Image 1 (cartoon, rainbow, N blue to C red):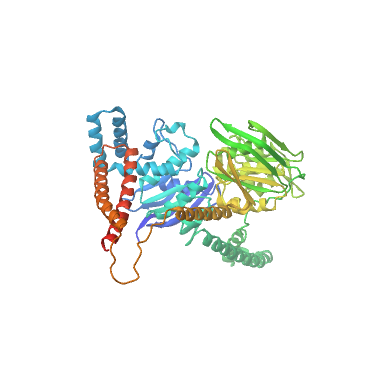
Image 2 (image 1 turned 90 degrees about the vertical axis):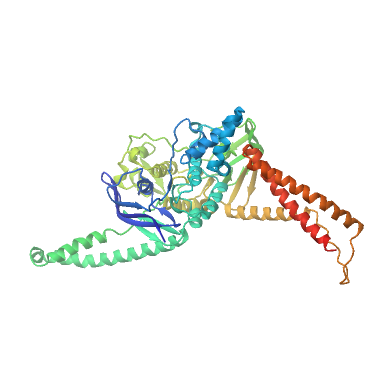
Length: 621
């Protein structure tokens, strides 16, 4: 199989910080690779290097000749003034210009310009392409194709950039966090879409279900090196555990041997000066190896929540709307002690507004929210916390508390940070040096250090690495308090919550008992039941009665009339179909008219087939 990308001996560092050293790997044609590492270990940097956005210290990167590469940045940007549809067609500028020319000519009613635009659309085969652009944007909930990109939110910008890469149909895609800012419906659509493509794929994502269903290989960056696992995410978890166990056993053997060597070093001063230099060198190498025991640095969070009383909060007749957009409509709910609630729904249905009302950050239009006196909030906002860029990490935490109570123990700010994977040296880095994921981890640290008994987490999984997510899941499972989580991470929701609010828009909120997978299974069953009911409600065609004898019966009077009508109807339907096909191929129709007529053609084909079959049945009588 052809090799799309070959990376050999790649090394990258920022000053004294070494991200990876002498790493090598390849990406074969149609191979789908997920890249995994902790925050700050160089995942996004590696993608930037491969895509040509970042320099590297040494090594080589070679692409297959004539390979077309598509790259989705973690935080994409577009030139101001571009329309959404223009931004999607950055690499198809000729088609974009033709589509824009056609639309402008249609609006202006300039026949000469319209004729020229139609010819250009035909020459570039841009009709189907324009339809595909709008289909993909619609799947990603971008509906205003003429909106200027500078007016888009960060999430909308990311979705437009994703659409641009998908539409370009490159031979290889490099995707940095493609599932960020997508709701669950969009993520599942993207899973299916990528699974059908024939291109190769190298991506970074924290969405573990996405990794499991899309990727067929995992590359892990650890200890400045890479490890490859020929399987999906589930396979990676098993094999990584085996690797770590083997590495730990090897290091423990080295430590036992080191004890003997250390005793020899202390007892043999003469040997150190003369004949045993090789053994001394071997001792120092052994010492280095013994010190390299991987302590699986984990976010060990003691559950030190404050006491929480029986009364948590009650919502009565809660109403909230922004103009015509209804968030809640006469909503009642009594939150129970130790409840763990997940909130899901499409973007724009009011999930974040709902929890901001609960916290008192947004005022409801009417109704009441009564919060118990013992409730101590811990709020992890989607917007994050604004840190002073020139402040050191340790000072950012000390500004909140010098000492933190965790699991009945008093920890200094420095000790607490170490539980969050901030090494002593990292604690004295300035905030501006932190990666996006490290800032999120620092923010999570500041939320939990106040020992809240009610955690409200709005999109906590964005930009956090998988190791941090796993430990956060364990922490929340043991948390002696209440939890509300808004997240599009299906795996995270399955692990953490015991029931779900489904925001369906227009104030409709469904309370479902179970996690996300339970809800999805129920939803799929409901759809299947509805489809069966719809099929049963359709009128059943009467089959022609078959005579008991083997002889050929004559048509009834009613069947003769039906046969005569069919002979008239079928040619008329054929004529209408031919006329519509001629109009569609003329190039004079707008996109909306083109779509309408294509739907009618499909209906006509089905009608002609159905009536022709009936004509054949009757003609045999």
